[in-house]
Length: 119
Image (cartoon, rainbow, N blue to C red):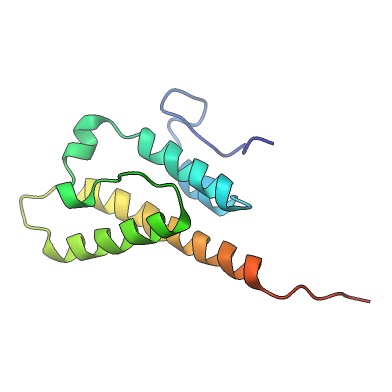
């Protein structure tokens, strides 16, 4: 079933910037989370991505570990941003990946938690 909160650059939810946070929050499994992350990254134009430090630009994000790695890298880059850097663009990317990484952790915890039978 398709995620109703997913947005696109040209779709119904184009103006709702928080749609990406809803897409991440509603991801029920790793596949849905990776889809949301991929959709978010693909919504960025090459010009927007070029405003990020090169080491902080998303590459291949095909696992929850890749999300965690990029989130860490963004955190490291945040400490080094200079006054000439586009902080608003950077913070938009960083905030999204902090949220996605938190969701990934919750999905992993739920997956590894022992299942209890309620009687």
